[in-house]
Image (cartoon, rainbow, N blue to C red; front, top):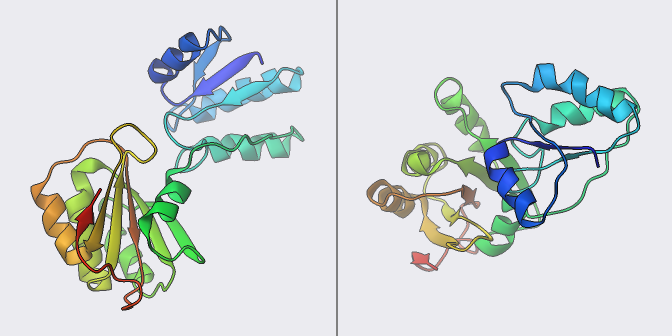
Length: 206
């Protein structure tokens, strides 16, 4: 391997040092991907291997990695995935909500298009999975309550990490709970269909 790509090199360099990995490290993110991709393709075309890593979770999920993957495919360069931690699947498994059918929406729009997107999702019978920043969890649950009605929800914080926490209940209770409680870390929100068989018996945190 001749190059390691990371969204935030400051975080990844700690991991590389821990495992005594000395390959060159290059930042690759939404802001620099257009100018980085030609250089990366040149490195790959020369016969060298490049590793794309993520700050948290699986690379290319809700980050610009897929643009690089598409560029590689266009150039006939092999892309080899290595399965790793995924907040989407880990959260779904631990949520207690139906796992047979689900839809991953990533981050909702902050302003423009947010209401429209929620209205589209309001008809979903599949479990809905969202990523959210800790500062907007309460607002997002309130917006989902307004659009979906009082559905069952699981809010996973720092999933698979040391301070993992999972809150389960109804959107109405969740909106109040997370409006009053400030949280930190990576947050995954999972919303189930409005069915007696899917609702949780009571609000609970573990």
